[in-house]
Image 1 (spheres, rainbow, N blue to C red):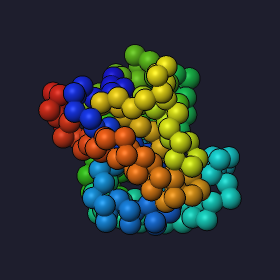
Image 2: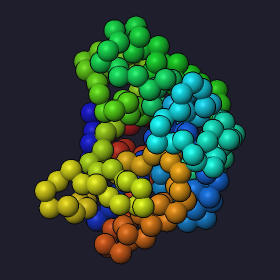
Image 3: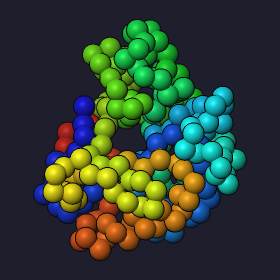
Length: 211
């Protein structure tokens, strides 16, 4: 279970969840800027199944690219990780239910993008001992949470009293309307504060978490 990455360098890590708002401008920024990002995708969001996340309604690109968009992200250098199939509260499920959600997502990601995930972000951050057991059975090496969230407008909502970035922070974004604009603002803000954006895989492996 990881919330931040142990490092003394002024580096933070960008992660983005779900897959509802498939804005091509975001992919262009990541590719052109060579910005390391880890995307934790949910099948129902990527495929726009069922009821959309209420905050994603009204977006221009809702579910537009399906898995083609995820493959474009992968080609741009984004790592594609596991956020379950349907985004349930895993604590409400038994072991088999959790395993179906996690293993099902891992198999689907491998089939769609060619590489399987090694990280899981449990929906809402909710997990229990069954989650860790099921994740391990599905080939997941670590559960990744976060230390700050990114709100509309690129505003960082901190979980620490001093309201500052700290080395090793993991920032959580979502695929939401105006993602391109918000992402541009966020990256600029991080750099102005003297921080770099780190490669999550490389730092995790250096910390002893290996695939």
